[in-house]
Length: 177
Image 1 (tube, rainbow, N blue to C red):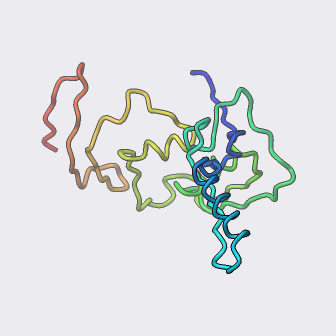
Image 2: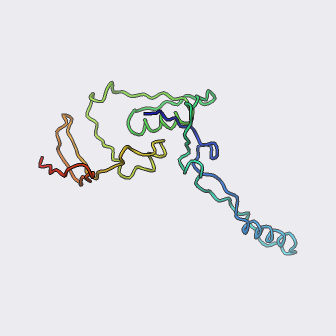
Image 3: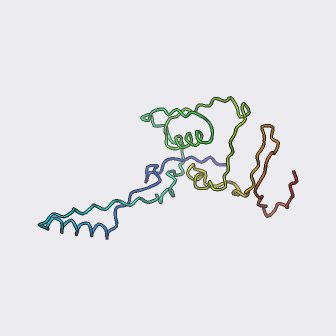
């Protein structure tokens, strides 16, 4: 599998959005209202300059990232960011810093995953936009299940809900456990 590297989008500077100037029609209306205001003897309210429109960046599809041939170099002008906690949020922040060349140190209290029971889970059903934002465009064979399984610290299933979506080549099985 070929390694992929990511860096910030040059067009939007990693912001995922770009400012578009106001439409030609709004600019013309503002110019006309401004001339009328300047020419009028009785000073009514001045026309309000139209706000720029904010659009999703087309170059990066609103993720703020683009594929790159090389690893993004660390920018020493940024301060070193301390990320406390190597869970889902801390790791996502570390990946975002990595893509943008921001130096960081990730701190985690646990020596390994088995040190204490983890009281959370991760569901990827509706996470496609978030995953694209992290630079993961898709998963091999996609996400194919709505089934949720809860396990205790020994791996025994203690709860289950949802349905399994069967692949074409996979025979349907009944799970009676």
